[in-house]
Length: 391
Image 1 (cartoon, helix red, strand yellow):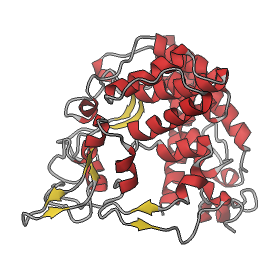
Image 2: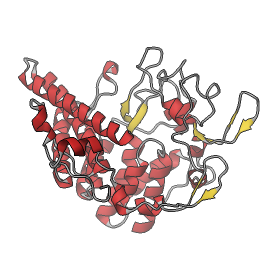
Image 3: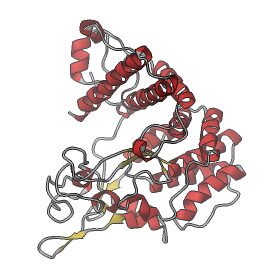
């Protein structure tokens, strides 16, 4: 269900973007307005394809409004390299069209810095390290962004559009269907009426004991993981959850939370910048150390000094895990760093008791991408073939 829904939702967004681009180009808008709308549209298309190519591998590239439905079903898959080429082209164009910032009424739109940050991540993912460094450096030297002083403030009420936020999905409480259901998804099963108002508590994204134990003593980010809650009967329930998305602006019901969803934070950029610099120079430069230490300092960790290539790389990977472990980056980080099979096939611990369980069905190489939705393979045959291993 989710495999199909993500594919369909992504291509729905791509279709809307393509329609916007065609309409903008044919409109009588002034050039600055055309640039702004086109830049935002191309950046959104790039983000959609970046997620698609990492999840499914090569996918069909649809770059214009669909006028012939039957013909669209026969569009084959582009290669992974071809998809990345298009992503880079879209983001490069967007970078040149978008402004540095907007006024408060436009908070949340793609900016130049957001396009540069995403392009840097694309280059890092494709191991084009010098290009990644160049994009991240633009963001760092733009002085448009800074870390919030206190980590917990990232998830406090009223933090929409803060200095660390580069790109967010925005929500609004108090108006029907403009809020999010993040608290319901993050809250432990059975906590409705305590941690959520209505709409259920699904426990979809609960921390394991492994991630809780990964934080060293004194790391303030560990406080974002709650170890349990007191139920309606007054009994403590040992069920871990993420405070930032459960306890913040819950609202009055389902789809009524005002908690925004971070897509890119400045901390993410600093850590990827440090990682890329380490790769380019076969060891950390002073700029790499400075970027990493900014994130460590906010977490109240001691600064690192002159480390070897491998030790610095390992700490970059660790800080990327600990800084934003539940914001949609972890799986993609594991793919990018080649650690996915190693990590996913290790023993894990359950969220509540910490009991260690083994893996009965180890993940195989072919499972690093999802299957193409069956309905797509069926309606597009023989143009689209299923990913290897799923036939």
